[in-house]
Length: 260
Image (cartoon, rainbow, N blue to C red; front, side, top):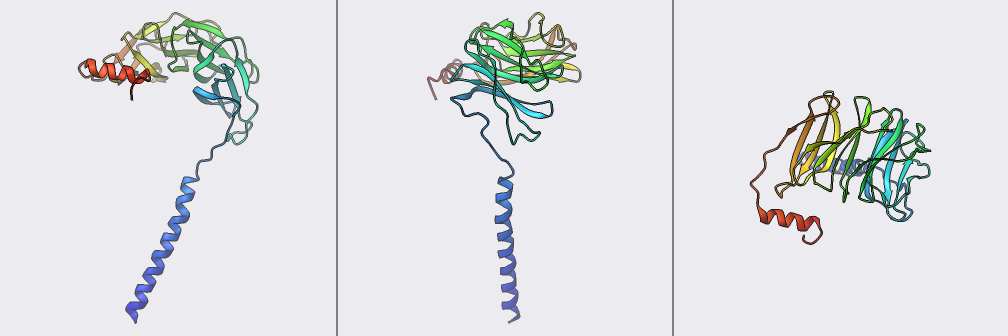
C-alpha cells in the first residue's frame, strides 16, 4: 500500500513538473514581440539600420517601391508605437546599405545612391523629423555592400567597400556635423575586400571588421588605425587558405545568383 502511495505521489509530482514546463516554455518564446513599422510597398529590401535617437529607437531603410531613403522613429522608449516614416532622400535610386548613427546630437545616415555615390545626410533636429541636404562623400561605382557610420574622435566617419576597385575604404569628416569630408583612406587593397564592413572605435582608435574574398573564400579580417584620426591603418589578417580557382569561381557564381 505504501509503495502504491509513493508511486502515485511521484507520478503527481512529475505531472506537476511537466505542466509547469509547458507553462514556462511558451513564456520563454513569447519574450520577444514583433510589430510592423512600415508595410507600404516593398520596403527594407536593401538593408536597415537601428539606433536609439533622442531616447527612442529609430530605423533608416530603403523603400524599393519609391527608391527612396526613409527614416522612422518610435514615439516611445520601447518602440511599441511608431511615428510616420520620413523621406530623407528621394533623388534617384537611393538608400542602399544604410547605416544610422547619432552625430553631434542629431541622427545621421550613410548610404549608397544609385550604386554610384557614397552619400551622407544629417537631420536638422534631434528627433530626425526634418533633414538637411545629402552630401556626396565619394564616388563608389557598383557598390551595394554595407556602409558603417561611426563618430571617430568627434567627427563622423564611414567605412565601406568601393565597388570600382574592390578595396576597403575609410573616410572621415573634417567637422563635427559631417558637412565636409576629408580624403579617402584605402584600408585594404585586396581585389575583393570590405564586404559587411563594421566600423567602431576600439581603445580610442577606429577599427573595422570585414570579409575578405580576395582568395575566393570568405575570411574574417580586422584592421585598426595607428592613430585616432586614421591617416594610416594597420591591418591584422586572418590566416588565409591557398588560392583555389574552382572555389573562387563557385563562390563568384553563387554571389551572382547563377549557382546554389
